[in-house]
Image 1 (cartoon, one colour):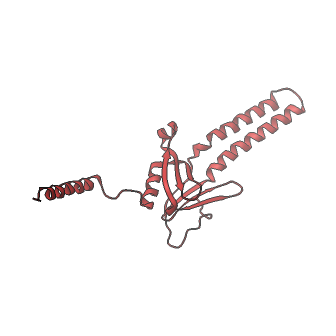
Image 2 (cartoon, one colour):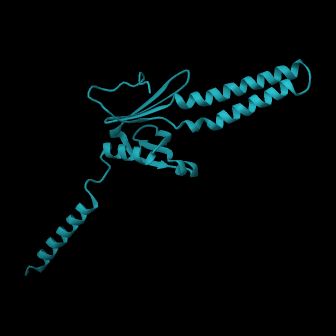
Image 3 (cartoon, helix red, strand yellow):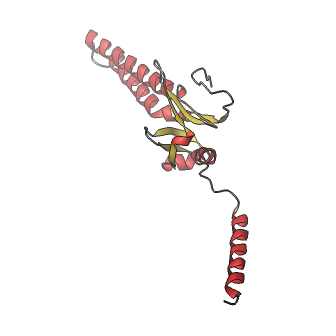
Length: 183
């Protein structure tokens, strides 16, 4: 990935980077191919005449534009999680970069449709205090990305389950000791 759009502060490091999976472009590419086929049929097999030929050529050109546009929209989208902020870049001709400090992330969630669950991709949504939500759409391992951000924002509970069970056992022992003392 080219990161000429990304302006990290001194000492800021990238914790994760990714982009939508390429298969996200398949619906747009499929529509584009269907338009090219329909345009070719209209121009070659359809009714004779200049209007049908020009209409078929226009339809085919629209199909090529739809397919290329769908592909470029996916390959020109990038997401970055640093130790200080979230970044999302999109755009084919113009570039739009969204940045949100990790300290402003209030909540995070991930979702997967049936295909996403089967193939391991999904969308992570970050709720930003005082701003618009940031979404990393159709990325690989959305649960892992959410975990990375939660860890960076301090939302993850420290310690393992065994450590917390030991704390609970010690607390119960202290309580029994205090309650068994005569009053």
